[in-house]
Length: 220
Image (cartoon, rainbow, N blue to C red):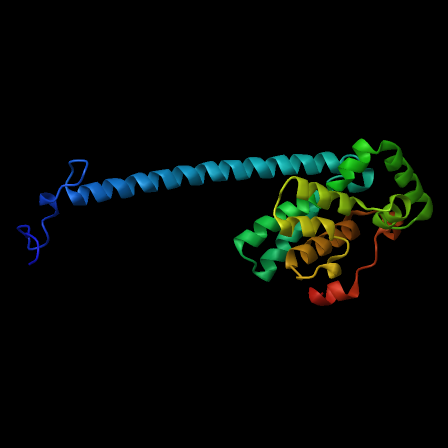
């Protein structure tokens, strides 16, 4: 048979008590309220941690860019261009977040070369001027590795998501990426646009010509 009815004709939840001594309906509402409060608290903590992380990454990017007159403010400009491209493509919030972080960190490998390999860094800058070729190609010739490869190694050590590691490692060669994730291509294109827009006329020769397959993928 059905349970007792309240005066209004519905189930009389007030007559059924839970373990806490509260009527069953009130106990369920209390539990739901507590869960919502915990979820909101966790969301606030997550947002604070996320904002702190992004702020830290931005500060790191500024410190990296300040090491070289050519790149002052570069990483933040790349991030702004990349976000604009991502929005135009209608990417979801998760991918947009990854684009922001990958853009800010794409040159993080330069920090290692400048801070921990100072002699190599000075040699690289001097020969870049003399040879008048794009920086990453000069690094390949001088060191046998590039700042993007060093950045990818750092990203792996820091245990950041694999998608970001790939975007950092291949931001000069996105066509080498097996899964063709748009994040890497977007960072590549934003990096190219930033250099074209902000390098002086006499510095334009230091920018590598865009890869045709990448431009075709991005429909540019």
